[in-house]
Length: 346
Image (tube, rainbow, N blue to C red; front, side):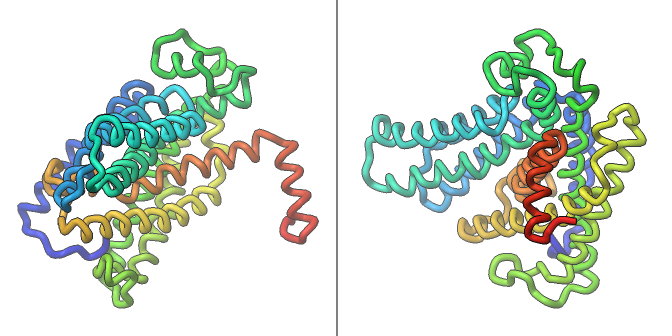
């Protein structure tokens, strides 16, 4: 967000104190990975879903809050031991569960459409998008399982290993350090989003004149978007450089080219802006300034997740496509030939 309303000094101090506590905690859980990261994501997304349904209730709607929060947590948990394919299956079951709850438990026709719609939207907006925080952290395991073992990344065995109920896998032995690259890509998504926001703030504050979306977020400008682009692209390249220096043994991380970091940074700028505007639109419609006051100086969890809930899934699918193209030579060759045939490829 660019050039926000001027805050009191005490407000800035509160924001910095909250960040000083939250950032090391996030990095610690991110480094730990596995169940630790999943538990943190469960807490954050569970509270985010609670905030979402609370301000929808404030608008006069009657969402199935318990069902929505339970489905959100279920999506995050199932993501720990599987991949997006199985998470999407659970999402379909969650949608059916909302419909059945309305039909068999609530048994009301009044406001049924809005109740079911807003509940399902919350599950998708917070739960399904939020599950990608776990999917992205574990993307290396998924890629390693798919391309370096016979069993693949899915299935009951993979899920049990993912949640720590089964023994170690031979995958890591064959895949080197690829199983841990998810930490790099989570850092790229988080830092890229933060630096896009920071670059947009300073550029918008200094040069912002041309309004970007005045009816949704009046302080955003096209000049600020340029600052976001610079911050995210340079930030992603610097994060990748720092990561490869700190973890030189992770060869798969080193092979992720810098121009891909720049492309990812540019995409993060666009998707992060979209996420920011979507949440601004929701809050304006609900007539609330912040999702809650759970994070002193920062509003609520949804206020911090607005852009990340778009940029983390983006990064996950970008990484999946990148490794699919690079680790499947036949497919890569076929695509290259197709592009060359139409004069697109080199």
